View 1 (cartoon, rainbow, N blue to C red):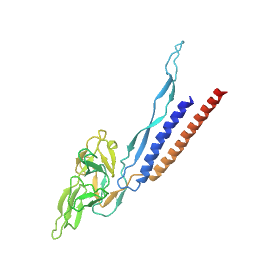
View 2: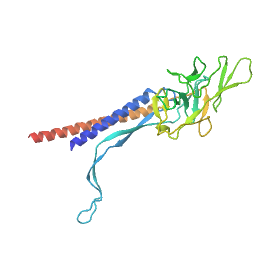
View 3: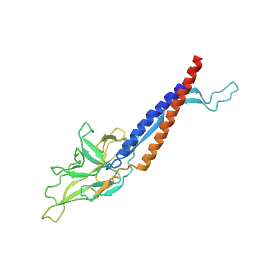
View 4: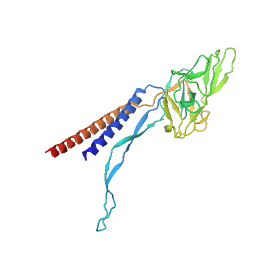
Length: 270
């Protein structure tokens, strides 16, 4: 019946509207350091089974195909893409990028992430008034474990394996003041997105495997570099056009179903 087509097309419009929201968010964050794009996954809904395949008739002949009418589609989920973003040379000593797998652990409120630790790929760090290394965002999340830069330090060095050292006046050797750790997850696509470029573990992501960079499959640290967003504007714009065209097709399905229903209504009145 046309009413089935009407409802199926309406589910398509709803799902495509969600896809449009995801694409718009990707494009909005094209210049957000460490941002990871998402894609929308769809799945079909239930089917009305009007005839089963394999049913035998009186001559023992089997029906080769069935007769199924689908009821539309829905968004099954959004999937994060953790492909490495481009590495941009900033020259700042506290701009650090991860070359390979891993996340920087930062301290957050317990209600945001269990254990009070969330994870990010953004490596734009600064020091706060206490000399602690924090994210350069509107909340200033502290790196975990906390690393403090002495006030008298004149230079900061960060090695590829995460050792943070400082130089102070009157001292030739570099003083080690901390160790940056990285966390990996068996299923990073299962992380919860909580804003601020932060991710929180979930049952789907598994527990974090935290340790030193360049150990256990973790990537290395690049000082003076920032990882850019991995959003590909060309791909997103193509997806935007495809979504728009699919939206128009579903709108035409609704219009066609409405015309059929109107014709049936006129016949009944006649």
